[in-house]
Image (cartoon, rainbow, N blue to C red):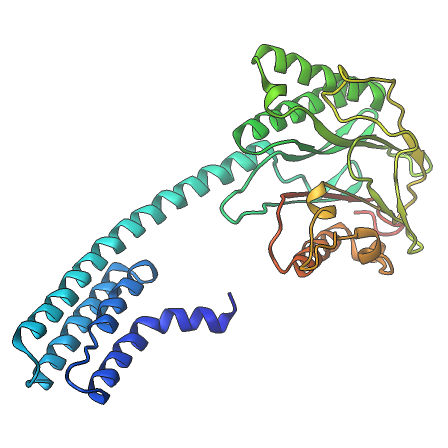
Length: 364
């Protein structure tokens, strides 16, 4: 809603009271302004505090009383009925306000729990890990839903900085549960396994094991798309990316070029090895100083505008020097651009992760 619309809604109870008075004074006695006076406290109940709602209710009853006195020629029974109607509605509005305020308090408590859960499952990574600048975002599709099946993790290991961005199929607590399993398995495997392929194998086995133990985790969610990356400390070493059915990462090079890191060999998502399987193979590419690597979930690529057109990050982000802007600015711009494309309404959550190897002379 626009700022003007929000202000108009807040002033609506007063507008109804004034409109009721003007209506009664400008119409014959057989017409009644009671609907205006009854509506005012009802509108105020979900918008105002208890005190302000009470003031509006008293004002509505007072306005009806004044109108009855002003229209002395009106039938007594009709006047009594209208006044009683406004009084009863005013009392009901106070009760509604109390219920709404209690619901708001419970919702705030739920939000606090959800935020705590998100911090536990998806902690905000440090701004610098293994010499790389790092930024992460989790953008929920619904304002009151703070966490879902989208996930990310970054870890400095003896093999370089390893990271994952993934998306568990499904919603709700089951998706969160599967995301916790993937993140936990990744953090352990990233530290212990010598290759990215071995890390993916550990994630695959973790999902299968938990699915069997819990008698249906994979029935709830089925699979998890994910992209894993390994960035060695040596800037001359290759960036390695392993994609398991996930949207391709984007690499913004220091010279302004944008490269979509689509996998050379398509692979099924994690958790689907029983359907079909073949050896994982990571793709390699250079990641020189100043380059920025962007990983995201399909909440970005499946965001639609009013015409049903999907958001195209390659087209929308091309042509700007993200090397000098940095990962934080890149994610800020991406979130804002997706919101502009969709009109502020997205259908799926977005997990975003950007890392940059600082240019020479800018290392902290």
